[in-house]
Amino acid sequence: MDVFSDLIRGVRAHGSLFGSSALRPPWALHFVDGAPLTLCTVLGGDGWIVPEGGPPEPLRARETVVVRGPTTFMFVDEPGTRAEPVACGEHCATPEQGGTRHRLGWHDGHGEGATTLIVGAYPVRGAISHRLLDALPVVLRVGGGGTADPVLDHLAAEVAVDAPGQQVVLDRLLDWMLVCTLREWFDRPGGQPPAWWAAQRDPVAGEALRLLHAEPAAPWTVAALAERVGVSRSTLAKRFAEQVGEPPLTYLTRWRMTLAADLLAERESATVANVARAVGYSDPFGFSAAFKRVRGTSPSEFRRAAVLAGGRERG
Image (cartoon, rainbow, N blue to C red):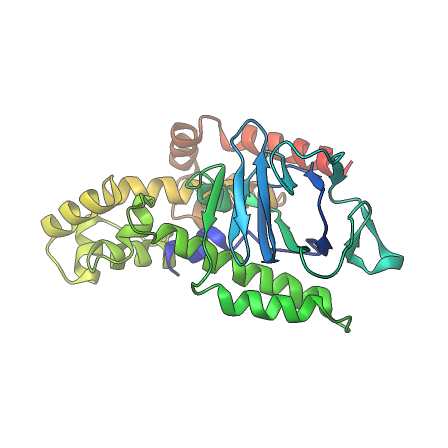
C-alpha cells in the first residue's frame, strides 16, 4: 500500500452528487454544508468559486476546483452578482425530481451561454484521511487537458441519462475524478507537495514508506528496514530523513498512532491492549504512553471523545 492510497481510502463519495444543471446568469449557489472536501467541475461555460473569507477563483470549462472544509463557498456567475444566493446542501434534493441530479433552487437553462456544473461532496472518515486534508490548501485548482479529462467525459455522459445504478456509477466516477485532480495538483510544476508525496518516488525512502504502510505492526528497526530495502542502515536513515523530514521510526510511531486512533473510534469492543497489539505494541502501557505523546490524550480519553462526537453526529 502506498502512502497516498492509504490516506485517501477514507475519502469516498456516497450519494454525493449535488447536481448537474445548466445555469443561466445571474446565479449564486451557496454550498452551506462545509463538507471536508468538495469538488467542483464545469462541463461547459464558466463561473466563479467564492470561498468564505477568500478571494474569488475563476472556474472555466473543464477546470476543477477542490474546496477544503469547513469553509463554505458560493458558485456565482460573476463576483458581485445581483442574484440572490440559493442555499444548496445535503438536504435540498427532491427525489421525485431525480434525487441527487436535480436540486431545489437551481435555475435550469438551455442553449448558448448556459454553464453546466457538477459538484461532489466527500465525507472524510477517520484520522488517517485527515492527514490528507492537512496537506491541502483551502482551495486548489487544476486546469483541463490532463488525466482527469476522460473521467469528465464519462461524468458528462452519465449525468445525461437516467439509468438503474446511476448513483453508484456517479459516486465512483467522482472518486476517480478526485484522485486524478489531487495527483495533478501534487505534481504541478513549481508546486510544493507534502514530503510523503515526493518521497514515494525516491527508490530508498519510497520503498521504506511502502513497507511501513504495508506492515505497520512489524517489529521494525532501522537495520531491519534497511535490510528489506537493500541498503545500509546509514543510507536508509539519511535518505529517509532527507526525503520525509523525520527519521523512519519517528514516522512509524506517528503512523501507528494514526491507525490506532481510527481503531479506537471504530471498534468500541476492542480493548486498549487489542489496539496496541494491532499496531505493533506488545505492552499496552508503552502504547498508551506513545499515544499520549503523539496525540496529546490517552487512548481511553480519545475513545470517549470519539464516541460522544459520533453520538452527536447521529443525533
